[in-house]
Amino acid sequence: MSVLAAFGFVSIIVSFQVVSGPVYAVYGIRPDFIILSIATIGIVLPPPAIYASAFFAGALLDALSPGVVGPHMTGLLLSAHLMARGRRMEIGTTAKGKALLAGAGILSASVVPQIARWVLGGPELDSALVIAATFAYTALFAYPFFRVLGPAIKWATPTRNDYGIIRGRASWRGLD
Image 1 (tube, rainbow, N blue to C red):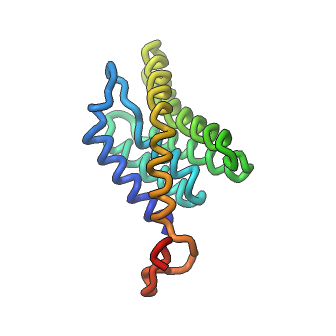
Image 2 (image 1 turned 30 degrees about the vertical axis):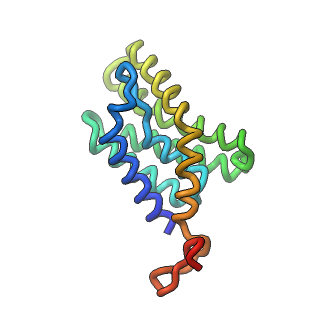
Image 3 (image 1 turned 180 degrees about the horizontal axis):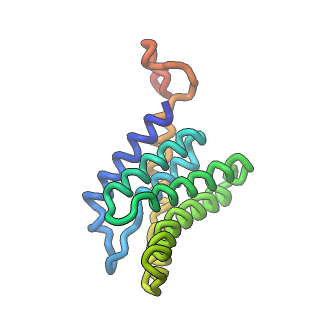
């Protein structure tokens, strides 16, 4: 069930980024809300939901962006792997650990598509500046994004692993 909640969350964030992304643009640099959604999911949900939502978001980003198919999906899956592995190693148990996991997830998801562009098109200095500016601008929104949407994701996922509402009884918090 957490995978369905993650898919719904990513779909909402993709539509939000498409519609209101240009509003947040500063000199052509926009925060990547999809990477923030994967970072939030990576901190809150179990690993299958992290990987599934990263795959889904990467496929959406690759379908919506021109060029080679695959760099966004690769970056988001690497980000999901780093975050799931960090949680398995119990790095994300403290606030500093969660910040470290979110920073590593944002950085890896931002850098991998640019590296793919460098490999295919040749390195350029402005691409490195774009990576740094996008990472910094996205990291600026990370804490407010997590504080607002983290509880919503926790509420949307069931606490038990049974069928829940499919069997006729709700398994969400507050509806038991």
